[in-house]
Image: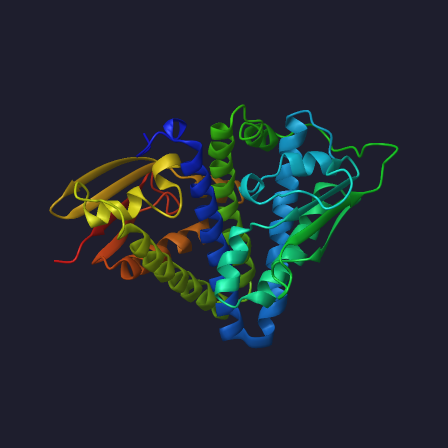
Length: 353
């Protein structure tokens, strides 16, 4: 079971959870990129750009496969009306010109972007802008070989108050031969086509959690290709990211009424990833701490699909201890993990005495 039934939550709460997920994932990219620049200097830029292109390829392919499984045409209207990221629930505003959506041209403006809030707040202008340029074009071109995107105004350019997106593709006389619909596409298609606002937010959380795992794995693989120097960046970047997460969570939780909940449990019951809604788990609490045993984890699911359990293991090894430091707990230990070959993950959080 999950800690909270996602189907019983109000839309406003779920929408805020999707925004929080976007902020958390954006922070992970930021800390890993900054650590790469700090440790590797000029060697970092091509690594960061390769990661963003691989991440774009991952998303473009999965979007196309999901849309094909749904029987939708592969064009710019489908891409934007059935977007994968939770940002589609939050960010897209009115277009300044013409028709907003059409098969070969989609134009819209974005005034609210949770990622830009994090990046601007940390003076991450350049690498936030690199993200937008590299990822979106790679995603578009992978989705359809004739597709491109331009972003003449961007929230990650100082002075611009919004992002202006134009997605285009040439009309084709003949649809490319994509081959048969994949089993992956059928699996992913279940998380599209919501019937209500609440269901739209639920499905956005599911898709967004998968993307968080993929964003990490594509970056981790590029870093690990650099050998020990890249692994050092990955591990230290994860630790800094997780200490930051812990500090942010602690600040958020200090305003919540938790008289019936230990601090250790609070950390996971109101987490910055949607543990309480999507992770299938059982919880126990005794004098040794709060124990969460997880039988289904969306991150493990995507890492398994990407043949990336080795990099997933590093994520689990480095994030929890640093999260405890930021949240002012005595420890959070990953006692066993699915990425390490166990049937379940087992996390124990202990408070300071």
